[in-house]
Image: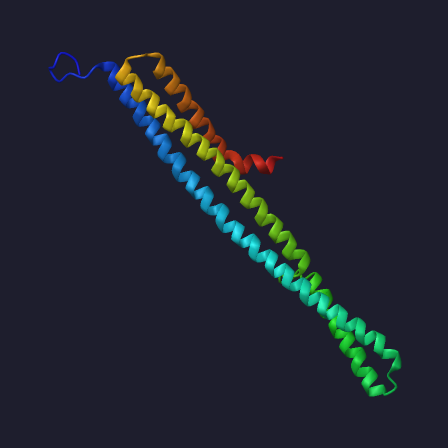
Length: 188
């Protein structure tokens, strides 16, 4: 205020507008950053669950393979034709199940498909984390820009407005990078 008549210094209005825009950018970057972080956490859980399912299939597959191999070793010693036929059927069933555990395109629950899905989930997690980090940098730059702009009001040092605006542009750039990060990752 100048002269005690309730008039606001016009340059302070411009600084107030700058701070308002910076606050808006900060709110956007914080919101998008939290969304990216939440997505990363959810997809990380998905990837962990898929890897656990993959490990369970591996254990089941190993048990069946081992059981089939044991019966195959015993098979030549068996003389009873009915027992031999039963053992051969059991071996064939176990081998079929073991093969199904390796790849099951119909359900997407074979080891091969589970690995592909888990790796895809890990990639989505990494993309979301990278976007989150860009939003964090944007938020930090904008927060500092707000402090610097506020310091200009107190000190009257005009250079601080330019520093604040520059930091604001850096913040906006990192927001744009954060928003575009998933698209950019898929280009390479």
